[in-house]
Image (tube, rainbow, N blue to C red; front, side, top):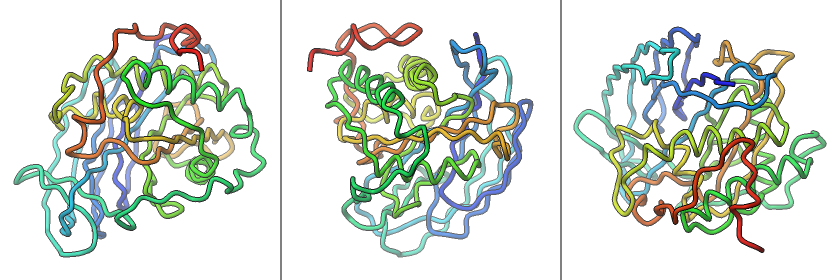
Length: 316
């Protein structure tokens, strides 16, 4: 089944937004020292489950720089979201002001900047012994296997080390998913991790394979061409999920899928109310580090539905 997906790149700063399938309008005002780009786009989801009408996915972008300057940005944007899979035309106005604070900042141009503030110079994640609670999703080994194996099949194809499942990252992902607000949160439990989020994919292993391989990887790998160099960040929304999946320096992943049927999934109108959050450590998509972390394919074909990884993974 062809499914339509809305790709929303959310800021770490406070935001107010309303979302529909026909149009997205938002006004974003940052009052903190943490700023990122906001992007809205659409893609299609080649879904195998007849129970899901549409789905959304959303990546994060971080950066690596030793600068001690951070940027506060006010963003105002109105974006028309098409329903035929085409990328919309987005008008974004960024007005940066600079302040000297502990953190990192990368100035991309005179009109656009990306910045984020890490808690310290070294990225830390909660202890692996952190409880993930009694929820049925993250304790389901089939769910875990689908996510880890499909990540690793694509990482193998791009010469990246295999990921391990992190109960602590999954526990943090659960806190975000259970809020039932479709937006990024990379500050919970101290932050320091990357994040991909998606809406409309239920917690079955089949849909997690579809989420990882069908949407995040297959839907974007063809758009990335900057192997061995730094990419044009204007195209980030086309491939940002893919690069996080195959990022060589990332070693762990932890995800949680929450059923938000009781309250609805805010900021994701028209999508089935399943919210999946995947956290990654160390985080990917670091500015200035793409050349060494995103390897070219060794030639394996993309996984076709139902995204069975068995023929693609080497013996372990």
